[in-house]
Image (cartoon, rainbow, N blue to C red):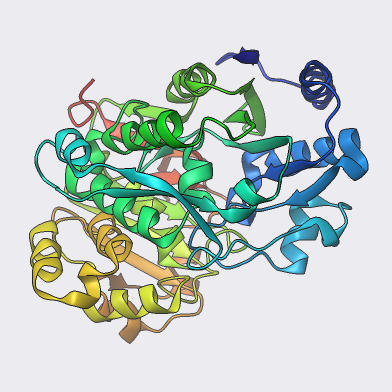
Length: 424
């Protein structure tokens, strides 16, 4: 059922409207004794999920017994991150998602289904898993809160991805990422109906119908003053809720370009982007916009590692960002990558396939480390003087010497493509 849907490219919802809308839906849902909220972590700070979770706490008070940030493979949130994103909500309510341990497996999506949706590329079953708190916690309402935005693994982020991937386990995370990478993320980004989404929907329909999940989905965009605003709010417990949010996100968060870009400069906000596991959104979201032999320059002051998981970090350092055929060969031959398919997928996602140049300008990783994973290196201080993120505007900029660049202040908020690269 779709409880609430409002959004448009031109308009936005005020904080007052957000509160009234959320409270009106919670009124419809009726009194609850034990509520679980599953919002994102600090890497989705701009999703408005923090503010909405605070509204949920204001409404339910003591009935909100647990908050489980859907961290996926990310590090657990720190005290400072929780305070920044969730304000005065008591810390005692927050739980840590342990993606390798605290799991409930509903069942297996059959290999035949994976083979069908992957067009014959893969032939394994997929474990439908989530954090056991969702199943064993005996909650009478689970609120899954988050942002719908173009995504490299599922096509569009959120909805049941939050349950089976964000709060999911290693088997489901590894295989879903690999399915998306092998199928081809350029065939999926910005689309609601993708192979990975079909798998997640199969899991929802066949295994998890009894979970009392209601989705609160946001679409974030910019107003005429370039400020981030809530463009859409969609609340419901079925696919229609997600579909309407995805349709709006494609209009709000997708930039179609008439010509490919020769030079793109992306800034990675240090609070949000500390690893290439996340920071490579600079590559994922721009790859369809960059010209052959073009260049992507990534200003990454917070970058300190490659993977947020120690094993994934090790694998990235071992294999580096190489072409898809090379990664597929490594998976075939080497057990360590075969047993960590999300790392393999990430290597594919982070490669330009030798089509354009990727130059990282990191704050806390050495030249040797950057070049060791097959990126180019440039000093952050020097490049920040040339391409000052505080002076550049999103979109086209003409530099003092006449050079034209395209600047993106946060790659996590959108998708960019040259029109010949995006096929409807």
